[in-house]
Image (cartoon, rainbow, N blue to C red; front, side, top):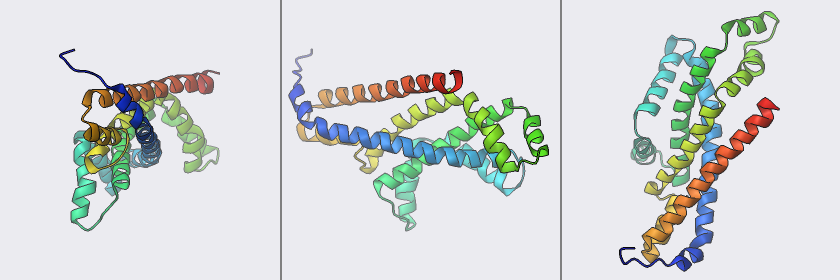
Length: 220
């Protein structure tokens, strides 16, 4: 097409590098979601107070995370904090930025889920002598994760795709590995078509695994 000749053998030679990049992408995605989830739960509880310094800080976090580009957040952590003397490796900076972004979106997802759960359940648990922490971990949060399960999976997929921005700060995740391979061979179409297929496959595996898990855990 348009006189372009595809040379897939070049991609085959670099496939181990692309697979290593895909592994780094998945590791970064999962770790940032774990950290983001823990942070989001804390932000959600602070926002339920609806007053005080903790509420204002949590609200500010959510607003910044959800209303500024992820690229801006990465630059601020990698370059901005670096200018202040706080230097992070590409991987750590991307992990921090992605966790920050995930926490903001997940906190809003969790807030919406909590509004569905009757507050009387928390009051009833406390009246039985269960601590506030125990009431949340054993009564509220199990219901919450069932309610927000699929929005949570959507955020997981979003984190997977956002991880590609790590390329701009020199991270060798899948997009970074693809760019490096392309810069050596100048075979743009071949490498980025394969990378796109790999992202598509990872995304669909996440969706399929999530549906299977939901059925086994919540419907079984």
